[in-house]
Picture 1 (tube, rainbow, N blue to C red):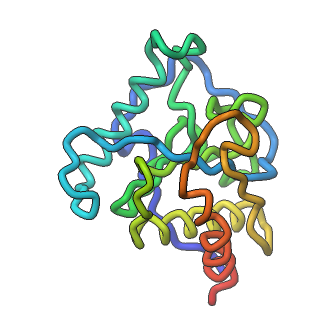
Picture 2 (picture 1 turned 90 degrees about the horizontal axis):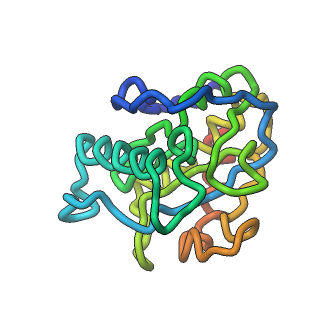
Length: 193
C-alpha cells in the first residue's frame, strides 16, 4: 500500500539553485537522525509555526550551508547538507535538491550531513535544547521513514541512527530517545495499520 505524504520540494519552497551539480549515488541503507539545535528566529510558540516560517527557516539553513562560515571551515557546501527538514508543525521540506526524485527511483544523492555517511539519508528535525517533539513532528518523521522505505520497496523500516553514532556530536540531543518509537509508528504506517 502506498504511503501518502506531502513533501514540500525545493522548487515549491523556493530553494536557491545548488552551487554545483548534485551527485546521485546508490540506494541508502540507513537514515541518519539529526536536530537543528535552533528554531526560525521569528518563531513565537513552537505549536504555532506557520508554513511561511518553515519555508523561511529552510531558506536560512540553506543559506548558512552554502556560504563561508568562520566556525565551520568545511563550508560552503554546494546545497543544504541534509535531505529532509521535519518542522515542529509537521511540515516536511526537501533539503538537498534531487533527494525526492532519486529516492523515488530507488537511489540517493550525495549530501553533507555526516562525514563518511553522506550517501545515507539525513533527516533533520527542528528542535532546540531538551524540548519534546510535537505530535505533528513525531507523526511526520514516522511518515517520512515509512515513505522512504516504501519507495525502496522494503517491507520494514530502514535502520535509523542518531547523528552521534557516527560523528562526535550531541546531535540529536534528547530526540535520540524518540527514534525507537518513531520507527515503530513508521512500520505501522508502512504496513497500513
